[in-house]
Image 1 (tube, one colour):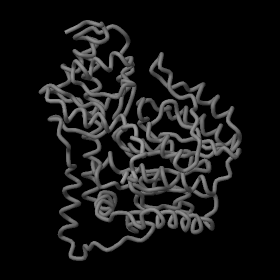
Image 2 (cartoon, rainbow, N blue to C red):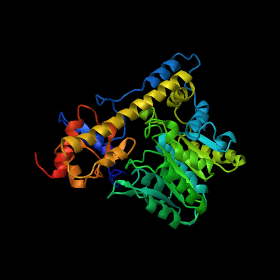
Image 3 (cartoon, rainbow, N blue to C red):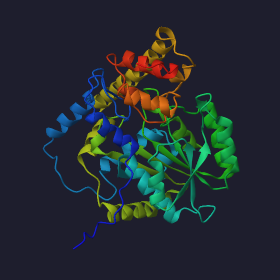
Length: 411
């Protein structure tokens, strides 16, 4: 009797997650993982934030702590603080109850549910249901959007020759798209390029959004990681909200709390009129019920304490500065080694100008292959590296290998 699953094709491996497997299987003592976007301390180890330790200790001492199901919208004490972190306590939409918030399975779950709701209820300008994503963007955006029946197309964003924002191209893409189009944008610390619009550029972009009546789909995965200041990193989101651009925000608490495996996130729809918030949330709740019923409770309780307890919140802000500060230090260190010690050919200022966890080095695929195959340095083939994977022990080793592959020299 033949197996009923014999005709199931093998799926292509996720290129980033495959790096983790390859790295673990590498026995070389000097191996370096610059692939996955997770913070590491100066010893290259996962770091549990002191504020998270405090929050967990507080939970364990709470006599009312239980393991009951959450509501369909999620852990209720988590919802408003998560929205306040993004939009600010002075947000008109927040104070006027024009924001519909649901807890989600981190940023990925938020992008998925948002895509499903858009596919069902948003009035796209064409039947094709096109959604525009930056070139480049996080690779997993594509399958998630397509799964919901949306058709991702790229808009101009990154200029590979100058390692900078293609601002004119970005604006042209906005102007050329049909009125009412949906644009998926990174709220801060763009993944994978590390290149964000300036505040003045965001102000120009929002004018085009209003002229064209476009819909803003923000993916906010790194609030606090770009500058070390969560308020500063929320500039684009708050600007678009204040200008009453139709919008939603997918929010992740993986990176800025270090709670990667707890999968905490939120989905926020900003409405023009508060009277529609209840019916929209009812459809989000229905989608959640059909897919997974309710979200996990533990991580949401931890994050709620990070956001609402005054003492723990202050420690969390310090922790964010510690993480973002170390990443900035590694950027400066890599730049200094390439420019001053190794005098590596080419321009490397983009390493300093890019922000957040990631950096595009500007290497070609063959050079990336050499870094991995010969230097045991694991990175995405686009030459995106997680700067958080650098530390004082491996920084010079990585710089020396970048110099080798740029010069084309052999070991």
